[in-house]
Length: 116
Image (cartoon, rainbow, N blue to C red; front, top):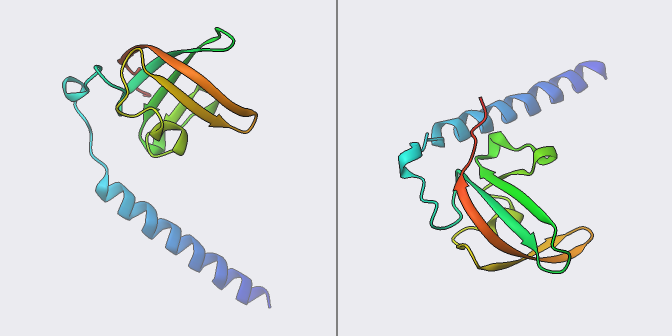
């Protein structure tokens, strides 16, 4: 019975490592000079203002391995991020969240500070 559990765990870990290996093969470094800050993109930090409350927030959109939700760093693949991608300063985004929708106006787009 215990041996069966160990075999199953090893199998799951093997699949996980295979998945990670495949993802790493697809990874590419994007040179800073190729990041366009005219619109929200991978490698950008976006300052927004909540249209209803006036609260100012900053969100950063990086790769899936750089996520740090405590510091508002999101994967560009996340549904939240996809709402922003391609938008420019002055555009308004409806951000859907667990506490309801918020309308956010993009006030600035700049190069993200990249993790070390």
